Length: 188
Image 1 (cartoon, rainbow, N blue to C red):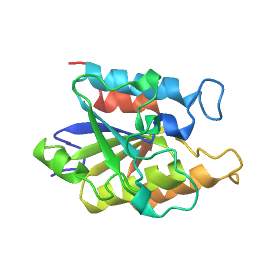
Image 2: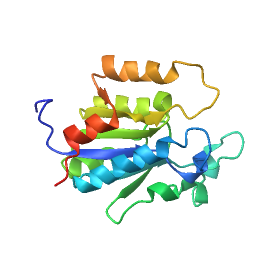
Image 3: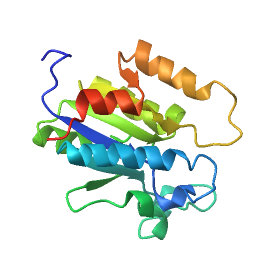
């Protein structure tokens, strides 16, 4: 399958759940509006939207208390990005959106061959999800201005370092929202 001719994209929104502290005025909150624009563009183009969030269980033996416990409010997608009727919600168990769940199966049964990735954190979940998508042979497109390093005290350059790996090692496309929507999310 040629890289320039994707059959069917899907928009994956990573870790935009309440347990991550996405509230008006919080660090990085200005990204939420751009992710909503991406989601709206996917709807207009009739592209499937999949929300992927972390989920923890008491049996995970994590030190400290996780805000992402099964059954907790922390797992819910933030109000600004609430899933629509046709959206899919998948829970990941570790860093990658493909980690110990049925994301790959879901994409394959829908005939998707391209993932458009947004959310947090660029140097964590976005990077690992992109790596797994690449290894599963999906075309990877990361929406640069719809990702961020969601840790306020992260050293400068963490986001660009992750995006450089996605571009150069994974041969993924890293583009701003306006280019991604114009190229892959044209209204139907």
